[in-house]
Length: 126
Image 1 (cartoon, rainbow, N blue to C red):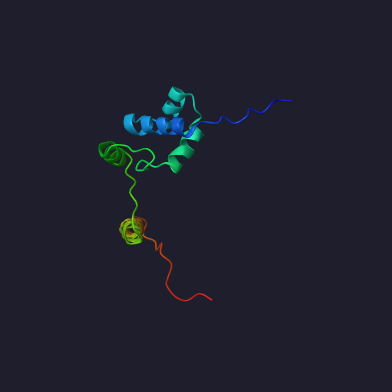
Image 2 (cartoon, rainbow, N blue to C red):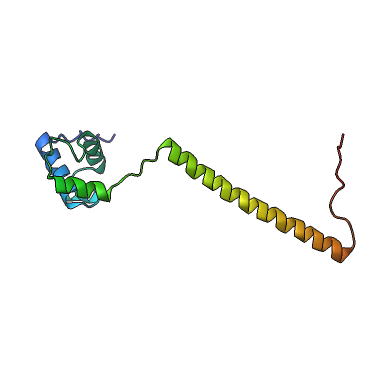
């Protein structure tokens, strides 16, 4: 039977020191974990608890702005998402129209060369 490790308990001062180092010097969460001998998941939890602009960290405004510039998340509004979707659908429609014209031309050429009718006659089928 294997013995489970008891969870490591870190002081709040230590957590803030690790986060301050992370926000100030950059690098990955895994690299900070190796540097400070902390599990990466712990750092992830601390990042959620103390964001870069947290009062407890009291980071200089330059550090906060540079971190935000590097980790800028583009949050699109619903309108922007819908506009992007519309433009994607318009491009797909244009490609499908082009494909349809190419197939019609291919059928037309095949009918001329072979001398047979390839297209079915239109009409309601019951």
